[in-house]
Amino acid sequence: MTHLKPARTRMAPSPTGRFHLGSARTALFDYLLAKKTGGQFVLRIEDTDRKRFVPGSEEEIIASLKWLGLEPDEGPGYGGPYGPYRQTERRQIYAEHAQLLVDKGAAFPCFCTPERLSAVRQEQQKRKETPRYDGTCRRLSPQEAARRIADGEKYVIRFKMPYEGVTVARDLLRGEIVTENRYLDDAVLLKSDGLPTYHLAAMVDDHLMDITHVLRGSEWLPTFPLHVNVVRAFGWEEPVWVHLSVFLKPSGKGKMSKREAAQAVTDGYSIFVKDMEGLGYTPEGVLNWIALMGWGVAEDDVMSLDEMIERFDVEKLTPSPAAINFNKLDHFNGTHIRRLPVEELARRIKPFFVEAGYAVDDDTLLRVTPLIRERLVTLDDCIPFGGFFFQETVNPDPQDLVAKGLSAAQSAEVARRALEILSAAESISPETAEPPLRALVEETGYSAGQVFGILRVAITGQRVSPPLFESMEVIGKAKVIERLEKAAALLDQLV
Image (cartoon, rainbow, N blue to C red; front, side, top):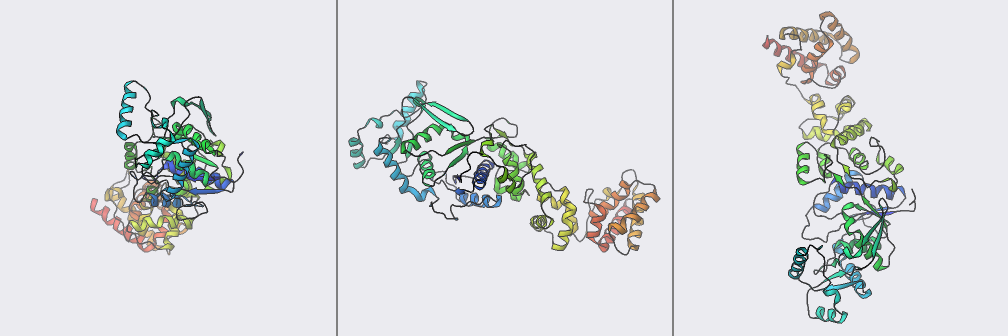
């Protein structure tokens, strides 16, 4: 990794909606680069688009980063020497820098009304030209512009793009990007309400906050030449630019749309980080999954956050688009669940049991957790695989108690024989219960699947469960006897 000096990276979301996987991956790569190099990871809230502002969005961003374990070193609520970290609180800074560009001759006040600009665009479209600003106010003398400002006319400040030549911008992943300047526009830097556009605010903030690497989505590539020109007009050193790959919908055809996002929810998934916790995903699983979409390592590599920091190399990121594969998410989530210590996994699944209405005692939970861990894909899978441990009684479907190939009467006889064996046992454990019950299999001539299938449904209430004998030990002798008696009675009713 060639950039080993401490990196200052920034995650700079707009509070205009929900915090999604693409933003989470950008934050992760920012975090990894900062931690790998002994630098800082900064959170900056770019909230100047007041029309699209969504209340609660900033809180969701911060909560999502915290849940993922990607807490910033600086930012709103964290403090830091480069604040404030909300752009609406930095308005004066942008006004001063916009004026600095005007004084340098690199920007100009524009008094064109929205109506005039719309008419110009329509004329350009009729001529099959690319719509762009026509330079009317760019040609005003500084004296004329000053007079109109003094007269109280509303205006914006636009950047004065060079009309000739080319702009050569370098992206770490994509190399040199060459753009003919005649295709570029005199973009608005400061709006008439005094708030900046991204094109000014992000460049100013990145410089003033000493950001060394700008990692952002490839949707910014069309305006990349503009941003490079703005930075150069100030005479500043450019950061290392890294435009990350886009996420494609699961089919691999096109970006995720609202329709695909809605379908994901129907399928039990979500593209929004805040939903992940409720769906039973772990931050470790989510981070591992998104890290491998756009990072040139083996797509099955299982890594913790610390292991990612150790291995990370920003130059190994790839610009190729990555299709979202929710099956991979399930794979990594299940893998990371099995990596958790029993005590930690028990702590994480307990809220799901409680929310489902089970009275959970920690001692039993610690005994249950190792039995169900291998079967969990998501944390909420603990309910179907382990809920019966915390029920006073179970209510099996009588038909499920009838073993395949046996009659109800034969199945009832198995239940009663098992009841006799377990009632006579001093205690129920794999060591004490399994040998006599395997002897029962031999004695009856039925298969182990038939005999133990009847017992499984009788004792757990379901056809699929954790290991039977270990489950019986946790449930306890009294409840096992009670459930077998109930099963025998249900089978007798079918005879």
